[in-house]
Image (cartoon, rainbow, N blue to C red; front, side, top):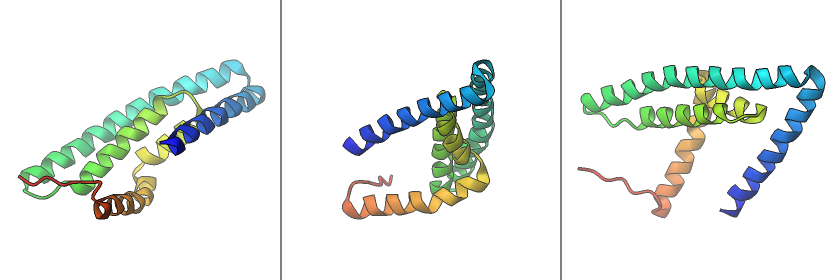
Length: 129
């Protein structure tokens, strides 16, 4: 929990520093316009890709297959969309990496590794009905 708190604090300081640097380079008005534009684009991309991913989860369930990969993709798109809505350029870049399919595939092995590690420790429980 302390790592998360310190990480969020460092991210906040890094975002402020980035906003100041970009504001000095292109001006305050264009910086604010860029922040609003990236938020709107992020919401639109996340909505479009999220709905497709949600349908993939439903299709997997209807076919009787476990929706593991589709659920991870849906979760990543949701997190990416949320990050893109936050004002700041670092969160926008991370959110865009989570939303775009090409870069999202790079993060999947890390998520699977994390989940397997949690399952071995007994921190993740899978309920079968």
